[in-house]
Length: 218
Image (cartoon, rainbow, N blue to C red; front, side, top):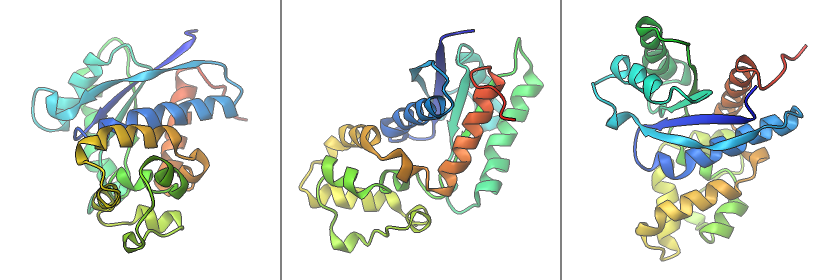
């Protein structure tokens, strides 16, 4: 049994990689601790869908499976956008995983869908205290709700987060550093109140169980 959990992360755009790999590592660590499983989680290997050869998930997922062959979990990010979580999962994630199965290989990798309701920036807005500590005060005009479902339903959370950064006269060139720091400070309990993150945790628990890091719950 390996003593380390190796994660691969693949995102759609470059900004995904500032925060999501760090959030994923923290969530996996939290799951392992909650289940008394003593394994080290390696900072995720980082890939971008746009850098994989071929167009469409039917070509990209098999290549990702090959490049991340040493990972126990391959986490792939797709924003739901104007689709439901279920429809985005069917159109992107499930088609990609099916393509991997068709290509075959020595073993079937464990893929994990990472699908925010709109954009991943909504997840970074769920903990107002962390936003204040890392970026600064949240302007009243940002109109952030304290209810997780309403934050996750923001139509353009990226613009809201960028507006908060600009309101503190922070340079947008600092954005990558701020998002990485924010991902490291977010309250995981607040984050886990988001329905999409609850779904992600279930997927991660199932993946860790399949790979032998967690015992099946009775």
